[in-house]
View 1 (cartoon, rainbow, N blue to C red):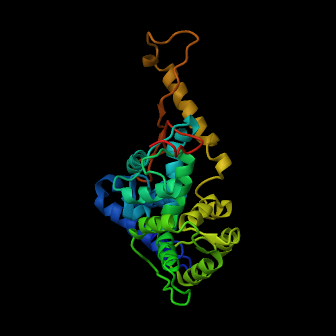
View 2: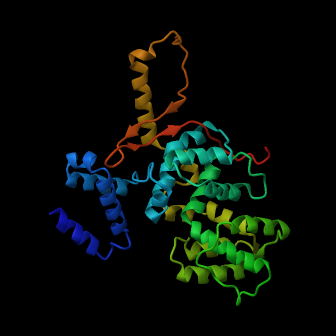
View 3: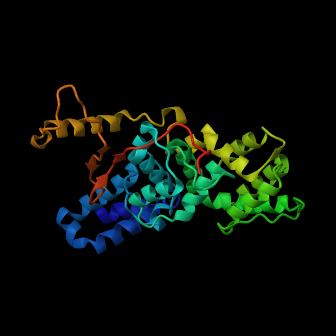
Length: 328
């Protein structure tokens, strides 16, 4: 029965679009690597829990970087996990540096590259020193664009570089992928040419790119909408406009709008239950418990199961409202 179901699943016209074969291959690989642990629960149950975790977006937690960036669904799921795990940073108002955000990401994905975090921080800080502090919301929305549209940003960076150097739109070669190292070069060029490039010409080149681009990219209508607001645009000015575009955020589907970013009633209920359990436990009755005095909770980490193993949704403290670009 399971074999027939899997055959029907992989032969479905939506199989390629939904990356069913990718997830099926990973599920089998995980099963073979940990078969002694998983087979005792039954093969059918294992596959059911695996695909349930994929559907719920909890499957990316503690997985390797190559896995979390392998599909659009994985990328969106990781962005959502990052938000839910560290939402308390935003609620508490703390400002963190780029390396601190890198450490948080590596708690969820041990081999998450610091270069990706640097590029996300550069979107926020632009020409400011990279050791300036950032709010959680500023970093999170910039990270979303950088991580979800990584290949697209690399390609438009190359297009921007060509236009900035004076190449005619007819001679600009639209790349399908470029080196990530080009992004800091763009920042240098922008310092020398603050006016940027013609928005309409830049938009035409991007639309040509999108027509044959095989990776994730924002909708052409959203790109047009952003570029119509100004006659000339810089690279990071354009990327920041993408970060702030609510339609693009909704298309990705990982985060709520910015006004609701720190609101998560479901998670708040779980945290409150955990705090209540700690409060009534025998170990909570210590000499430090003074009537009328409440110790603020410093960290809450409610845990759930991660498909076949454990699924953890945690929150740590910290946060902020605005990015402090004045501190070095």
